[in-house]
Amino acid sequence: MSDTPPALPPEEPTAPPPLDGTLLDAIPVEGTEDDGLGQKRAKRTFWQKFGGEGFMASVAIHILLVLIAAFLIISVSKESAKKDPNSFATGSGGGAAGDKAKQFKTRLQPKNPKTTAKTPTRITSKSTTATIALPDVPTVAVSSMNAGLMGGGSSKGFGGGSGGGIGSGMGVGRGNGTNFVSLFGAKMGAAGMVGTFYDLKQTSNKSPTECAPQSGIGAYREAVKDFFQSGWSPGKFQKYYRAPEALIAGQVFIPSRGADAAPKAYGVEKDVKPSRWVVHYKATIEVPQSLPFRFVGSGDDWMVVRWDRKIALDDGYEHMVVGADGNYKDFKQVVTKEFPIDRKPGSLNRLKAGPWITAPKGTKVPLEIAIGETPGGVFDVYLAIEVARSGSRVNGTFEGEGTLKLFRTNAEQLPEEIQKPGRGLTIDMEAEGWIFKTVPTGVTR
Image (cartoon, rainbow, N blue to C red; front, side):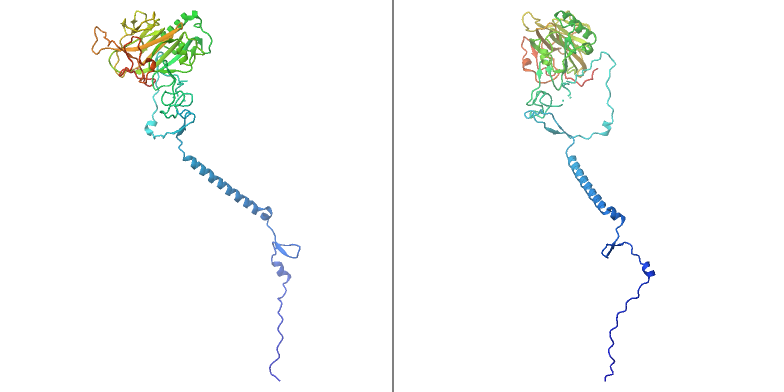
């Protein structure tokens, strides 16, 4: 026998005591539901049932798209800002390549704040007869001015040509382009007298006037004289037809030709018959020398020169203000001096001198010149100056040099037709030292 006790059978695991109903009720089972298969799953919240997760995802995607779009817009804006905003493009008019606009860049220079703060002085005049050389904006216009003041193009104006920046259309005549230039003036120019063309035979709306019939020559003369007596007021011609564009002339020197040359020069030959017209030139000029001088000239049919609001020459087949006796009351001088000229046989074969004018060098004065044709046919006009000999004053008058200089208001190249005037005239066409340069509009004394 063995004293070893017999092995005990393994103990059965003891099951935990069952929970009573009170304890079971204390344990929450929120968020579970029966799926029908005897399994429990978490209950969905209201936000989940509403689809909140999808809504938040959509909002996030839209915000991302907005940010991307904003980035692209800012990038494009910065790229555009790199371009020079101070560049401009001409019209198509650049010389040999006038059909294509070329871009030129102009750098704006910084201005002194003190100068920009100044208010410009307004130039006014209380005088009803004051003369201000104000060109009609060439319709340069002024025409022409101003002009496209300066647009180029295949029509008129400045372009980007290889010949100095003037277009292949009508310009100032430099570069590969050509400016319309006649003996009556150019459609554009750096300086000169601004000439306006009037046809007294018709109104501004092209209705016939009292000057239209051949018997209206007397009415034409009266209208012209009324213009002079009014102090050369353009308002006296306001009712008559006026050419749309002005011309800028550096001289008034036109050899004999048909009276239709004036309407053609102003581009109105289709609307204006070659008779009873007027061209009125205006400028403010600067006296180039202190020596006395006088105007010498004549017009077919007439020409009148007004210097500083005083009649300084009136000569031609007709006299509009000063009689054939040459009594210039404004200057208290009677002038009889003549210069021969070879006009056509039977014509007025002389130029007439006006009174002596004395003005210090640099004096700025208003100048006006009016020319006209009465019956039609042949027209011409010549205007020069004679300079007094230094120290030649005797008995209150002067002795002239005996030769003439072309009256000029700029130093531009002269038309070939008048570079060598001939016609028995001894005349200096260059007039070096005696060019009466025009000055800015509104400067008069």
